[in-house]
Image: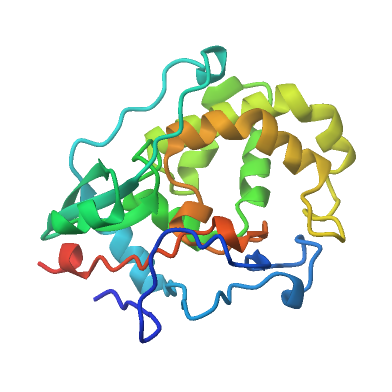
Length: 255
């Protein structure tokens, strides 16, 4: 049974513009100390993810999952990022995804918010467990980019599937990797072994290039990100951009 860890008063899950500081889970690659980047945001206690909880998410079945991309989305005009909230509904191990205008609208329909913004290719709970299992996705995704070098999107996507991503989510990640390679390769090669952050907390030039050149299309199509799912990662982000998502899927897990 999934365990929801919340402070005694559950906050609004939307980002708090008054929040100050960097939210994340720094490791040896981050370049920042714990005091400079923390998962402590006021009264909110982020969800913990023991192995058993991740295994339960992998077992849940999404009805009518999205199909993988078959063409490069970066060759098309950038899509608009969907507003609102993506939420799940279901029971007995099966669930559906739907976008709502607000958290209140989702909860009025008995839906459980899973991330901020409209649903997309990475909104499934199976993809959530990958995001939660790898606080530092930069290293394994970068390794997939190197492993698939020369084999195009298909090679990168195959490696990403081995990380546990669904085919749809792996497809947008693969196109993101290939687009960043084309746009940022020279900068990223120079910074391959450098920390993710500068001393002032900003991203290094490689990661910022990916954020600027590839991020808008990725976010619009993927739907789920670590920030809008309330997940702390090795890339530390301004805490005012983080959604406070509880991830209580107990009703769906129960048979």
